[in-house]
Image (cartoon, rainbow, N blue to C red):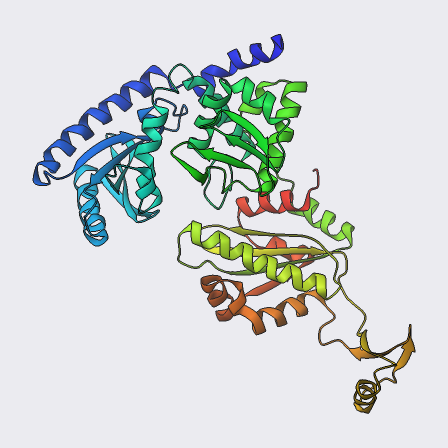
Length: 447
């Protein structure tokens, strides 16, 4: 335990904002308040609040972002909230872009600091929320005093998760949200207590934050939101990322090290080495490459997952024996990737007929013109039929052309328009360092 405390002490400077960062943040906050006060004179019915990790002083070193929420009266029409919210956001930042959550908001910069200006409804109770962002003021009010004195514990947990690639609840990551991190620290009391207790979590663990107890219940890992007890704060956390976190906690307690808090660029083998590995495996590796739809990531990634699952299930049914499936997206392209144990199937397959007792069905079965004679096995009639597609890439191509509508609205449309299938080491024709990282991780091989 002494070694763990030593590591934590060494790591704290890596997660705690510097005096210079804090000074810069305060300057931006002061300027932003001046601008908001000036603009909101024209909107006497509105008010603003600084919320999120900056307001609670739980932001990570190097990750400063100020969240300001513009609170609208409950009876404001949604269209007016969106329109006015964007107008205010654009007026108070130096440069901006529109982003989308429950509704559009402004992401911009003030004195070199990133800022989000988010409109929401001012509600008396969290039970009456109209969109997810309306909960945020209630989350802040519940946390602000409870988190005091534990800010660095939150930072340690966030960094631990970030280095592992599982920080962030957005669909691309499906990890731990900042709010979930803060709740866990409040519930357990410290970073180290979270790590210790997490080693015993299961897929059925329920952490009832408002009741202060833990129990098991089928239905998935559940962290009760103290602001809305019916809501699972960990709803976006994938089972695999939960498992990854539990295992990381076990390993950290056995061998504490600063490495768990230091982000490193993974070493990527050369294309020649990756190509040799692909050839040596003797598997069927296929990549479906197509243009990225122009939609937000939280809409894109569920569709990619759906398309990937649809093709993987098909390959399983067709006996290509899939090993693994995955998906990747960058600024301009998407890739669905599949590795199967079988590259090519036999050109014929067995087709099951009726049992001999079903005379009418047997007659119909035998009347059909086929290339091969039927045979009896196990008291049933069988016949060999020719496969339409025996190569894995042809089977995938045929499925996409027939069933693109089942692969997500926008992803399906792009697949219908055009796609390429790359086989074996030709998957290396997909360009980009990020895809190389993804591919090496997907193949699970060490360089």
